[in-house]
Image (cartoon, rainbow, N blue to C red; front, side, top):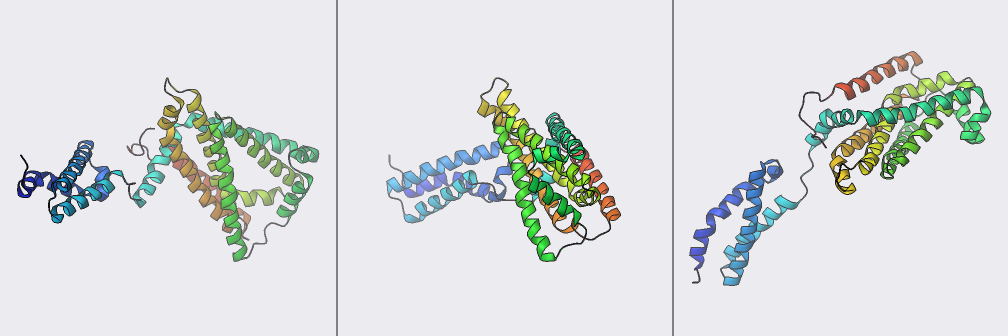
Length: 324
């Protein structure tokens, strides 16, 4: 028996009102308890069915328009991307990033060794032999580094600082991205770039030091090194963790294993990118300034302690960020 429009509306109105009430919380729908989200999804399917019935029965445009609008709002609330929240960035910095680093401390330790040990080798080799340095870097590049740090300490113009900051963002993020992204090759790419970058940095330090400009180099690098060098290591650690997830899948498919690790990988590489952004501003404006070297060394020491305490202590006891 065909129902009249009034009977149809009277029977279905409570479900429409219930869904409308849930949609009043649209901005926070993804934060509702799972049963509430499941209920909203069920009501959405019912509304779609009601809409088809109303159109098929030829009910008035008022009813059809109400159902059409309600269905559209429900679809947007359930299936659109969650709104961007500044609070999410704060949660990442305050909890998610340092917690993810500590959960992957074995990969961080391995990445640090792969970065630091070749750096020590490069430093010692270049300090003792210029020939060693030019085997790793070209002769013009070594000469350029010696000249650049020989002229350090005079400061730069504000325009030059801003331009160099942009370059540092581009260059540093590129290095970190290669250290991370090539981890998809079962971690081998990340290992290579960690070793290579550590070796090159060590060679630069050794060659510049042998030329008599080591103090200038240390003074320049000290300020931003806490953020930049740590971020490179953490990016490489994330890449190695990604590669390991593809090797040790725990009886899951490689894709499922990678998805299970994706939360921590995202937090680590995003946190490293933020550290590189901070490093770029320090490197662009503070590091090349004419401020006295002892002041820069003191600030650098404080920054290293700050970064270490942040990674070790931040977010402890807080149930944020989740376990990947």
